[in-house]
Length: 314
Ligand SMILES: [Zn+2]
Image 1: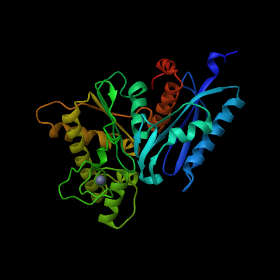
Image 2: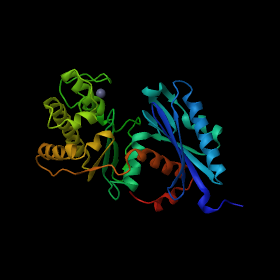
Image 3: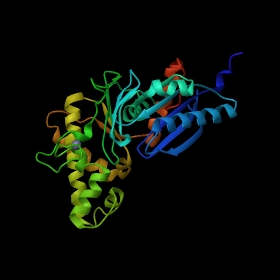
Image 4: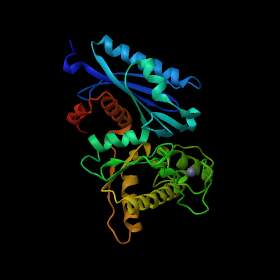
């Protein structure tokens, strides 16, 4: 007997440098269970297999039937082959994740890039819904982008499209860990703002604390203004190159709200002399986006991609 329709679920894992966040998602898009584990310093593939196995056991314990799985990874990912080409945080090079995990887990498994997958979710169910030309820019410790152009996610020839944080926007600027100088994320990221504030003042503060000091601390004002200017310059480049209808900002930076959006909107307008800027919106799915997108890919891997078209929007 085939399982009743409502019992089919997928297992989705968002693999980060420090934690692995797993969820069980049913075919209506509801998260029915979640598990989080620290990312080990060695044996990450085995730990992923174990986490997927645990998620599967939890699902079966609730009378649910896992039909597919997905793992989203940072770094450079060949989604067609299911191979993580390079992930510096994990020390990975050419790891055939899909081929390693499928026999262990016994389910079809999709392997995808974390930021692109978050972009997929925001595009289908969130702030960029209904548009064929979208850029999602999560700004956290670092900066990346998921690009949707002409109704399709752009992966690039080597799986590294969207490295927005490493566009060198400041000539002869400060060095970046990537080896270039003047990269966007050196100035306009959580880590960048915190580091630059500490360098000016000698006192340690997170980007969130720097934002809280705006208007009362000239150093905070200066560092934030530089971050906004650099980000606006980067978004102007994206706009001129891709002509998106909406740019969706995510990550911790987007929580700054008006302190970010108001000056950013003004500087983006000023930076685009001959055309109107696109709408700049804040992510609706937040840090759930990666897991939601992974669940979509898992249902697609199971040959059940049609199910997700009925999922609720945010
Ligand atoms: Zn860089």
